Length: 210
Image (cartoon, rainbow, N blue to C red; front, side, top):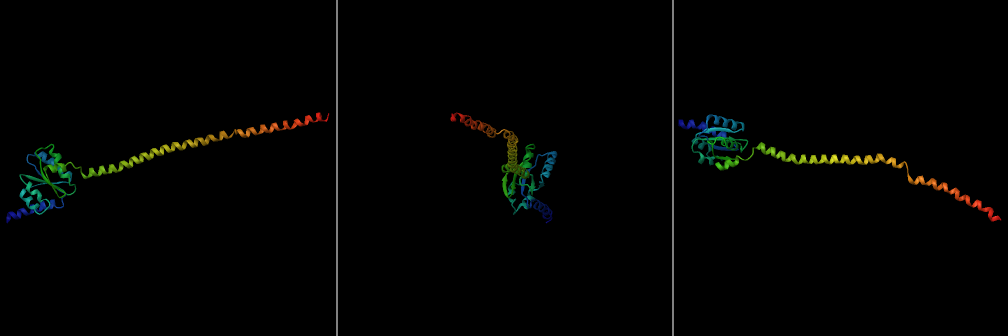
C-alpha cells in the first residue's frame, strides 16, 4: 500500500501535465551529455514545451483510458516526454531539430492533436512550421495583393497628373491665335473696292448726250 501511495502523486502529476495537451512526444534521451540535456531543456522551455522524465510504469498508469494510451507500446527503455498545450507541432519540431546535432536523442512516438505517430511520423510533423510562422506567411500573402494594388493605383495617379498638364498648357496658348482672325481682316478690303465700281457710270453719261 505504501508503494501505491508513493506512486499516486507522480501519476497524478503526469495526468495534470498531459491534460488538454495538444501534443505529447516520447524520446529516448540516453547518451545525451549534461551540456546537451541542459541546452535541450532550455530550447523546449523557450518554445513553451514541458519536458519531463518519468518511469515507464508511471506513464503507463497515467495514459490509461486517455487519448495518449496509444503511446504505451513505445514505453521501452528510458523515456522522457515533451508536452505542449499551445503549439501542437512545437515538441516534434524542437526535438527533431535538436537531434540533428545530438544523434543520441531518439524520437520514439507521439500523439499530435489526438493522432498517433510513430518515429517517422513525428519527423514529418516536425517539418510543419510553427503557428507564428504560418500566421506570418498568411499575413504576407494577404498584404502582397494590397501592396501591388496600391502600387498600381499610384502609378495610374502619376500618369493621370501628367495627362492633365497637357490640356492646361493648350488653354494657355489659345488666346494668341484669336488675336489675328483671317475672315475679319478680309472684310474691310471688299468694302474698299465698292466705291470705285459705283463711280464708273457717272463718267460715261456725257458721251450718250452727243
